Image 1 (cartoon, rainbow, N blue to C red):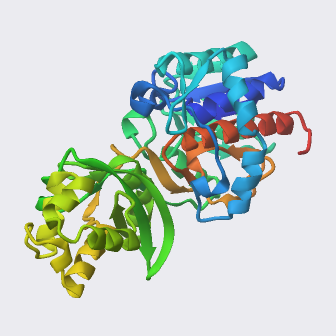
Image 2: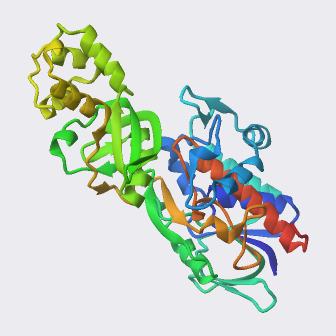
Image 3: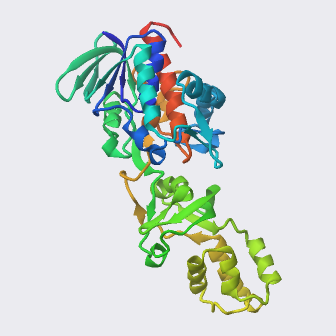
Length: 407
């Protein structure tokens, strides 16, 4: 019987296999695709944004307890995690101005290759093309695993690192969530997250290519549930860019309104500007601060003349325009779905795992890590960070469990 079986050869699974094997446990990594880490290869535009330069629990979202996230982040602080990549894996990282850490090589492939090599060097056996079809408990408390081709193996502990449903061509098709369900878990229905949003407003899609900073607010039942400043990109189908990707889970999951303030402009700032530039034509003033096409659209929607001087705006006209400048509601019709979503929301609830080990509270000997859990991070390396931290902890915990050592 194999002490530790890790299912899923992505970011979390590779770390789980490496650390389980490094802890002295016989470990096999089972990957359904022909190669491990396909999602790593396409991440960050093929460059792999491995980590952020700073993080806090507020950079993540879960339907469960944020205290669990806080505890897990403490298990592998960022400086030590960065050292693992730069010292243990010999992958120097470079910091970009927006607070993202990328491999100095500028490519994702060396990252994937080093992770595979590290798992194998630690003693893990890697089997690709081994897609799990069934996992069942054995009378002795271990697990019986069967592949789609009928191969079977027995494992004392099982680590599910199968991801969610995002980017299904990389192997993340939600099958792992179904396995977790069969083993007693009640996954929250997955939904696309960090996903571009679509609109039926053709005037807005005609702004495709325009990118600018915005202060976005997700508003549900009249309450602001999150607010940040990031870049928004107009696309031929709707909206994208870091602002929209970060905000998307609120719209997709809860139907929240997404309001934006263009260029992070505040109402009082616009009022002062209109007063200070009273003799300036409205269109010229807005074009000083916004892209021309966006300025034209906002003026038209405020039902104002472009040549109107700012000082001649009535109180009602000024209020109408400022509302469009500072609280523009994105008319969201839908999202681009799983093929464009960078991560999955939903998954196995945090209350169904022990936060100190990531062991299932429903099925002893089962450990879960990465995207299969009900946690998503902001864009910018946070979801990789979650994968690294939980993969390491799950692998080490499974090795201890397999050896009969309590947490």
